[in-house]
Image 1 (cartoon, one colour):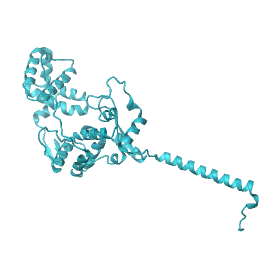
Image 2 (cartoon, rainbow, N blue to C red; image 1 turned 180 degrees about the vertical axis):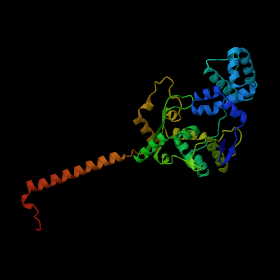
Image 3 (cartoon, rainbow, N blue to C red; image 1 turned 60 degrees about the horizontal axis):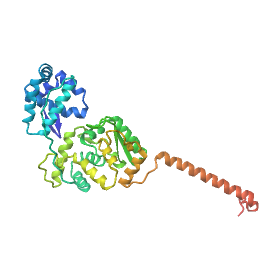
Image 4 (cartoon, rainbow, N blue to C red; image 1 turned 120 degrees about the horizontal axis):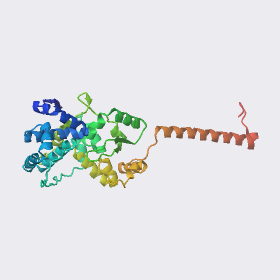
Length: 343
């Protein structure tokens, strides 16, 4: 059972049985958590369309891969959505690879069709939509807008005690920009990366909804589209035309206008900056901080430790100056010494 807002949905028995299959549970455990949530249902629909169980797919791939390959090619060619067909092919290949199996799919060409271009949403428009969203979800969308997190990464950060503790530490230290590191990368980028965004926005974490930390990305998508309609947008055509994922596009567009270097924008989005790893500019955190401060028009703020050190230094300087003044009074003008009670 899972929830969308206040609505409860019951998982169908056939789906539940599929997810309990030992070969499926073993495969899911080998995947990245964010990948597993989508891949497992794609494999379920593929098995259902072929009329076989996951275990039977493995048996046929091992004993008669040619016949199974022909069935898969026919199924994928007849799929009206080439995007879905390519996804099924990728998921099946991943499932079989775990057991060191593969299918001969020679001649299967699934022409790639570029996704439709989405309308431009300006930063101010995104902020207006956020203000029209449900009050409980508003802080989540603000964090996503300023950090360029997608829904999966936001849910991950919002429910990670170690990350939240580190965010609290940076906020209390007075950092103007808060850094969050995503150690397991993002989708096709296995490398760790980090994001930087203003302290005032980081203070919104963790975001709570319905009495607990927000932990369902479907709720994020659903409430965002409702807010988009409230803002007067006609939500039609492609399903992601004005989806919450486009907050990343809004961030990318705005940061381009603010002259944040392209390598730093791609890094913040969790993309591969350089597949050959020659470009290592993101390792120079001083430079990265400077560029983000310029983009956000921030001036570097002193930390609590810096302020305490400065205060100590000023006190020492004051004491030194007073000692010099007293010494001069004693050494050079002894006749002008002020005696107690004498004006």
